Image 1 (cartoon, rainbow, N blue to C red):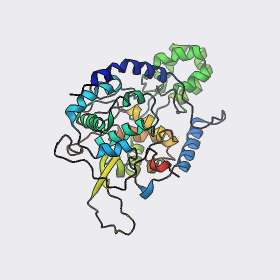
Image 2 (cartoon, helix red, strand yellow):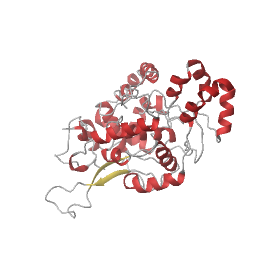
Image 3 (cartoon, helix red, strand yellow):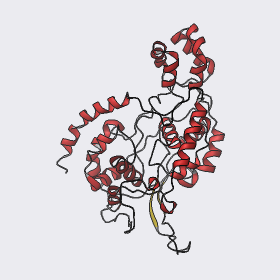
Image 4 (spheres, one colour):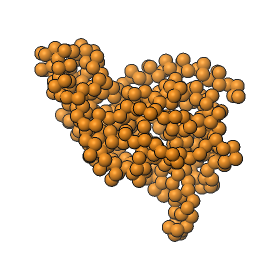
Length: 378
């Protein structure tokens, strides 16, 4: 039993104070805003900039580069030890590992161990910007603790009824404020004023199935006269209409190769064919894969991460994905995520963990070992 877990969990209260402070802090947008640009134009400009700056890692593979991750991948995880360490994570992701339905904190339960190792290590190495999670992640002590807690998280039962998308027309005042998301509650606040904004917050995250139903609720909240003045901007920011047929087509054309036919992700991938080798060389040998499970993930969390990856805010994202989704519109994003939010995991989708006799990944001696993401190196 780990002797310092009690001390670490005692630090949660202090860390939570920091969480709430950061939650209300304004995050600077990735691109300078031109007041004449529409939300769609802002998204398009940010996505083009991110795609132009991204660099593919050596060999075209998306790999863990933080030294701590590479060490953890060579170790075997113990879910029983990890359960105790998970107390540090439960403050935000809850004991179930299901996160919250508003998508602020994601579901971790059932996520691939390799994916979790990479993300935790990237946050600790500051390869991924996550100031809310950083103080919690830093309470984990080294590679063995990382692989143990990740093994435990993978074995947790996933939420059987996560929040999914609306599957069609819907009107929502989004919780995705204080972030680089051009259609958000923040945008409404700037244009309707603080008094109206406070009243509109009473409708936050409530889902309306028709425009008229939403307009009636708006009129009741802020009054008919104020609604008449601000209706256009409110409706623009609350229009969450999507199309599952479009989502299915986009997913099959763009996402299946990495995330699987039912959102199962992948914890392994074929070893890169090196110069001088034929395509047949070691074609059955596998190396860690970091393609996350998206089946069963919270719809609003997927929307947030998709948009962050597209505009370059999530720095440790797969560079291939950044390029792949560059031209996705807001409606494309919402549609494909809504479609994917309905997937379910199946038996055999996970790597087995917890076998004491099972060695970790054989990464060889040529693996990257510094803390800079490979695709950001000159």
